[in-house]
Length: 391
Image: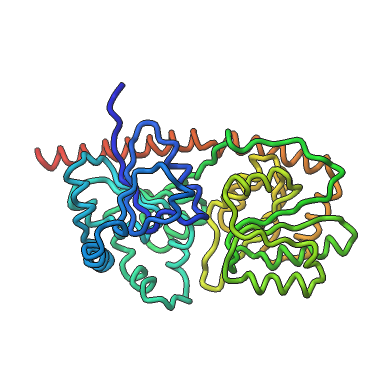
């Protein structure tokens, strides 16, 4: 057995509760050991067991100085110490703005740098609504990535296309799906006589389009369907969305569940009739990439009604694993939801097809085998380049 290679994975904050897809990916490595670098370590109770090096966990005096230097000039003696001590083979940053933080280390230690593009990091590049100084600075600095990054991994075709449109060389960005652990996501027999359970999952922010989902659900209820809507997640729009349910006279049929542990989320999915994913392009151009909840629903044989948006069409096949509608089209959302809740056989057929699609295209074991093959290829190319430069 060959010794494992070593990858440094960088996430500015490790790890927001909504980013289970990064946790899942890290746990599926077989040929690589991983050290996680981060500015701030959070939610360790949810994502334990990783080898994390955090600038937020050094001594207070050093922490303040080092954080200032890292945020402004990408200087970190803590990270440098690891690179000098360990034989690191590759750096993998999540989100393009995370990649910018890793550029100096990639150059200093002659290491290939791969960056996964998730959504906001790409859509910020085409937004006209940028107000925060940190994002303005990101917009100014992102072209540096094109010279240094060995390969970008876009989680949806749309993100790949946008990245090319803002100047990324076409041969430097590929579509790479984020997989899901199918062993933890299994269909179950559902009681067809029960009250229908509809679910929406995600942060309560504009791009999730939950208001349109609520309005579509209200229309179905007003047509006589006995159902409950469970909204899982927290965010700045909660009070607004609660008011929408009151205005639509369905507050007794909508449950705001807040943030839940991942296993509870899966329980909700497995007991649901339909997942609604009515995402929209936000005013600041933010949008969804590879929607994890849609993949997880399909893996549980739950049909998905999603918008033609971001990475959703990559996941949902219209009329095969669920339905696709135009963004903000409440009438179409309502019509598709009514159809599914009235037809158990159709739900079962679409759910079965969804499970098969996940097995064929989104099995995390296969996706991580592809990722490690990408690592191997980039390392080999980098070693060859280094050998040629020494010749």
